[in-house]
Length: 416
Image 1: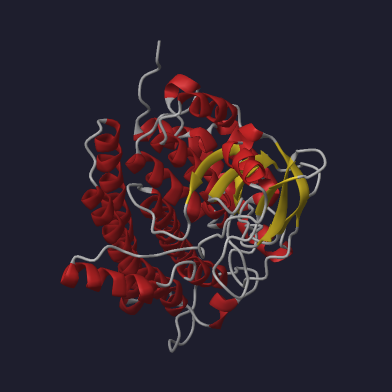
Image 2: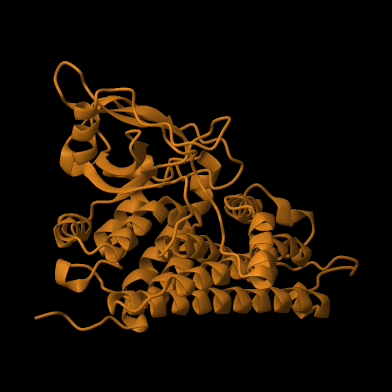
């Protein structure tokens, strides 16, 4: 019998002690730049990484609004954690959109057992291209993967890597074991924020690939259509940002409540009784409300389209409208989160800048997350949509030329 749906209260009861535990070590991990292997393990063991896996495979089966609510709470504890797991959760949504039952069973059962995926998709090169190549060895006929990726978020924490490659016929999504021979995962992420996400380099040198590792074929040179993945990935960022605002409010309140000096007032006084401090904290609370509400609205839009897709009724126009809604939310959530992460320093003097508190991590992490997708470019796409009904045209690779190999060999790779 399928277990009953989990309520928000049951999810809170299960995960809030873990969030508290994660938050307690967040500053120390930041100070020491200690990768969050233990927190990731706690989340795996508690079933957090399988929240969106359907219950018939052993997962939580939660709705998208429930999922993003929990993700924001995790972001408030440590905003590195949602980013570490972003590709993992995106892979789950990818499978939920796919009707291949064998693939679903294969991967959902592994994820329900606690296995996770990391990303090896984006590149840091002089042109937008997917340069990782799946080739067939001329002497053995084996499929081999070569290439290099950067922004490999979560790769150092993962059991499996979701890799974007191509065989000159099309782009491919491959899933390979993270410890496969020929795979090198480097902790060389040099961003000033999200320092613990392991978003550095992954190299593939003649990595053996079995045919069943090929999950899908697509064209990165064309805009993504009839998929909610763009909106989903964006909403992960937005939920993380909303979590940062909650962390800012929490830390600001704790900071003020523990102080006994007010700037410009002689002797001992309580900043918590200062009307100007009241205004700052009131603004922070309002920004928290706004960002939560916006994320929840987008999450409900995702859920509605997810249900319509399952019923076979979703239209291209609905997918485009959802992407635009996520872009619109991005404009406001980014702006309000960056306001909150700066405004928090107005609750106290120079002591708020103490390295022991690391309040600056909130701004650095928010600014880094906000930089993943150019807000100005998205704003222009919103305007073009409303003025000209033009859908977003983001493309992430040049077209691939057919490999210069005999037709039989090219066909054998394409069918693998």
